[in-house]
Image 1 (cartoon, helix red, strand yellow):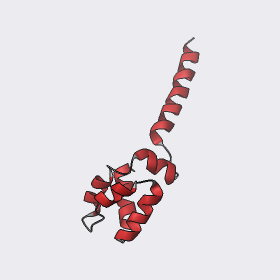
Image 2: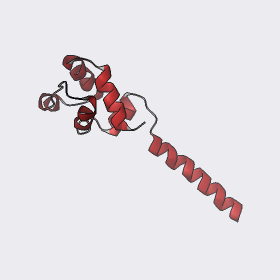
Image 3: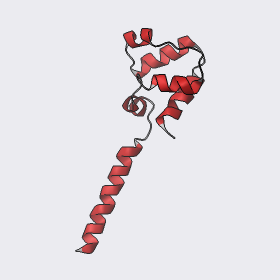
Length: 89
């Protein structure tokens, strides 16, 4: 699932503007950014695009305890590459 989908799901889950601002504070969004950000009732998909400016992938991974798939892929790829090199020699 892409991070845009995760942001969309979070926006949908936190139903009211106050709830959204509260959870965004917990995720580490600064207060001045919250004043700039309007937690309106626009479509979830459009607001996920807007939230992309404020919620970084790192914030989502650390605070929501998600798996960093890019980091995981790199680790697995390196292991396979080392294994392949050892088999060649």
